[in-house]
Image (cartoon, rainbow, N blue to C red; front, side):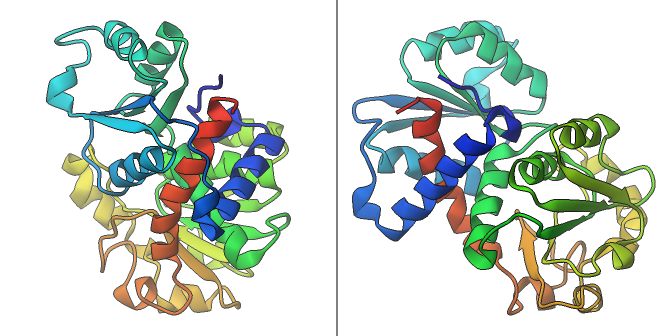
Amino acid sequence: MTDFLEVDDLSPAALNRVLDRAAAWKAAPERVEQVLAGKGVALLFEKPSARTRSSTEMAVVGLGGHPIYIRPEEVGFDVRESVEDIARTLGSYCSVLTARVFDHQTLYRMADAVAVPVVNLLSDRAHPCQAVADLLTLRERLGSLDGRRLVFVGDGNNVAASLAFAAALTGMELVVASPPGYELDDDVVDRARNAGGAVDVVNDAFDAVKNADAVYTDVWTSMGDEDQADVRRAAFAAYQVNAALMAATGNDALFLHCLPAHRGEEVTSEVLDGPTSVVWQQAENRMHAARALLPELLEM
């Protein structure tokens, strides 16, 4: 049994197994193994979601299991009950607990309380299931990821952090271009580098994207930071992914976005809907990645 709170909870070999299984099952859905037949998987959501909830539910269904979606008002972490008590109760019914939370520490508390795997569907520190889907998408389009150059333009947030660990496990080079004050955390950079990752943090987006194989962005203001929207909009104005920035890659670089996108802010519609955009492939791959991940965590 393995918890999945961050990408580097998987070894390089385990991550490759997940990606191989995701690709094989995507190509031949009839081969999907019903490893969750008769089993429940809890989906606890403090934050609303479209792709994460839908992809995880369908992944569980595809494996023969029963997804149990639990809204924030039904849970009440540390209001109705403690995080630990909620986790212990659900862990007695379900084979896996998955959670989309505000505070990453909540996931550690859950994992310490139960003997079943706990999966991070998003926290303030990490978005590992998204990163696995991103790797699957890049591998489908680029082949081997070793030595590929991925440039993340924007806030050094939870998505960028998970990409740093994903890059370290796959041999990709990751460059994160952010305005001063919004860079990827030093501890994330140090951890990724100590794991063998080639991770660089810069402020100049146009210089960063040169020779990029793929350019990735996310919203400038994440859920929970809405009170900073105006300040962030001004700080990130020069970090929009538009036709000029994509042309600066010097390649037909792929464009990625974890969605939802704020068209006209972090990305233009011209790029989002353009010929090198793989955002819808990414979105689809959320389900394929989750479906392949769960058997690995259950050691099936």
